[in-house]
Image (cartoon, helix red, strand yellow):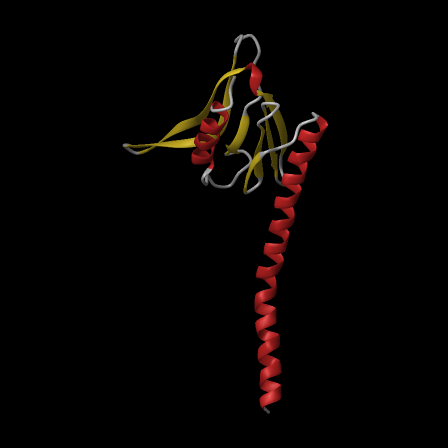
Length: 160
């Protein structure tokens, strides 16, 4: 009787734990894929990423020697890959776009997009922004704005 109860309990526990393990394995696989894509982008430009940070479905990387910044965002709906040569950048800053929603007398400001933006030295050329969050592609805003602020500071320290 004890062996049967132990076996039945083990099976039930395994069935309950399996979905969590499967989700974790899938999440780790996606993270590795994003980082690998970022490294591949850098290699295509003869660069090597020295600083990298991955969060959710995006990753930002920096080649300090060649002064290049790389960005990859991949999820089911969108795949964005951008790079910026920091030698042509004056400033990097965190930027948000928002909209105001009224409900009766209340007004709420809702962030619709968070991006890492770059100011070109000549102002003639528009550089690609790194879009960390967009309400069109992401269900919920997380820590994208603090991440954008952190990386703006990191990248500004490497501008020539």
